[in-house]
Amino acid sequence: MTSITERAHAAAVFIRHTMTVSPHGRYRGEEHARTAIRLAALLGLGLDQITTEPDWQRRRTTPGEPVLATATCPDTAETYRFLLRYPVYDDEPFELLGPCPACAADVPAATIRHLADLGVYLARGPLQIADCDRQGGTPDTFDRDQGHTNACRYGEQL
Image (cartoon, rainbow, N blue to C red):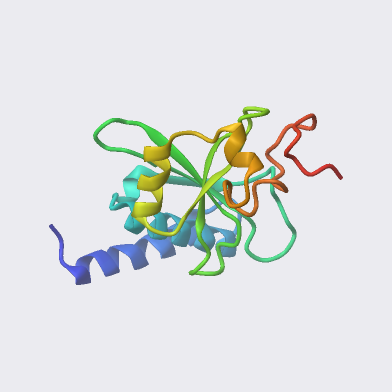
């Protein structure tokens, strides 16, 4: 186990390195690095088990474009995909992506602020139609998420 000082230093080095090598520029690189650090800490994983990428489906032109992060379990190799809509805010929750019960697209299935939130979702299982139809059964962003297919009854039609 490494000391707090060593882990803090490694996080700072990771941010600087990611800012330098990011194909999306310094600021997006910093957002991706901070997203990876936050998710790794939340899940108790190493940074080598977190990957990030821009979310081209939910893009904005404002600071803090959404970031997709994939966490890989070191024991089972199972992957979990998370969305961070506003990475410039440290208190913004992650959204676990899972299949929509109506269109099967990757959409917000649970709001994750703590490891226990993920545990609650995993114990419950994937979203069901009944979850989508009851108040509080899905994350606030579920109905308006751009991940739904055009024909999905839950996706916001523009």
